[in-house]
Image (cartoon, rainbow, N blue to C red; front, side, top):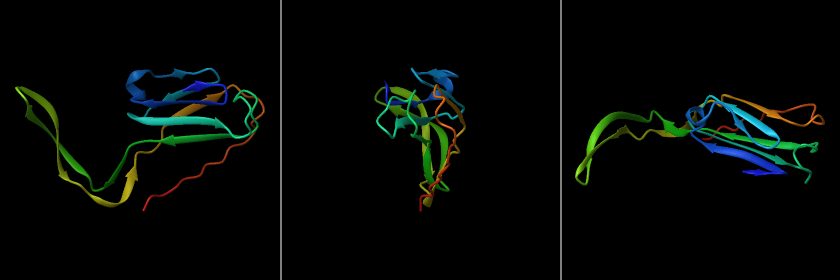
Length: 119
């Protein structure tokens, strides 16, 4: 997504490209899979916004989730995949966010990190 007041990416960012360049945002993610969205909170373009919400999400799985590599037949073809050996349970665990996000904006002077635990 690359609009004046909202920019973001989602997907397998670590292997897709080491750096994702949007109009006003640069994202370098070391996560195998992640979602990053930046949204103006004052209805101004991100380049001139004074308040910006940055949302980040990674892979979530139930605690003690376990899988093992396996091969299985899909129609007439053998494919590589995974067999789930434990579906786990609560609480869910997230892969830590590992990214550098730069914004072309000289007005934002501070940032706050809010972490939500899922139980």
